[in-house]
Length: 288
Image 1 (tube, rainbow, N blue to C red):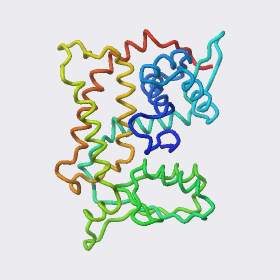
Image 2: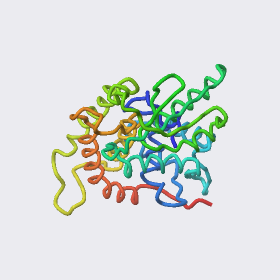
Image 3: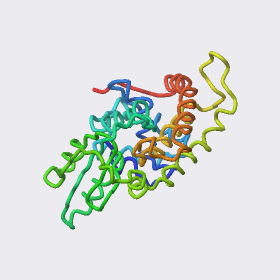
Image 4: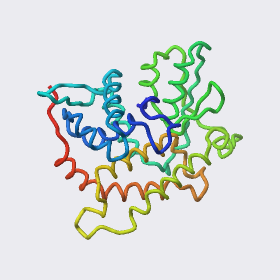
């Protein structure tokens, strides 16, 4: 599940503190159960990617108020952990990165169609719906008819927005007279999506210039925890508007595959060094 205020498709690779904050918690808290991290540790790590202390503190407060983070005091220190809502967001992002991936070469020919009609006064809810549909892989075939390749379950999104009475969902196959290649070009901005992958690959390939020593599990990065935070948050920004279109209907030089390979290689090089650094650096506590 995606939240347009959490990951804004328009924000660019230099992302807002909240996106970086969630990437931090996804990297170091999501799989640790009921772990909480002190505000000082969050300030330290986000400072490594250019976020100042005032911005970190205000972002922590906003995320608590929005139900994304929990907060507890231990002595004079404040600790922050994930709420169930934030866990769902991060688990969906984790699956998008590590399970589904950026390339769909096994499409079965089906489409999910979603039609909606909302009152003109519901501008905010319409924006929320469109943002979450984009994250879920949909694109606007027409103004009120959106499509996504494959079988996509948007039940949770529609129910959370309170739009069940205003949305209709179908699954279908295109008839022979439909030019699927043209339909895809009309529905999605392929040049923009491809440019994101190309730009990501250009930014991160230099990190692979010198291979790590055999068996060391570490690369040449001086700051693996900061590097991995930037890597994951930039990759999420790169893939968030990509609906994973069927590979056979994309240009033969589609850059998603090479960019994903670069991401995974840098991720593999930074995973263990970042984990070791987090163990030494982060001040944590168990949630009460």
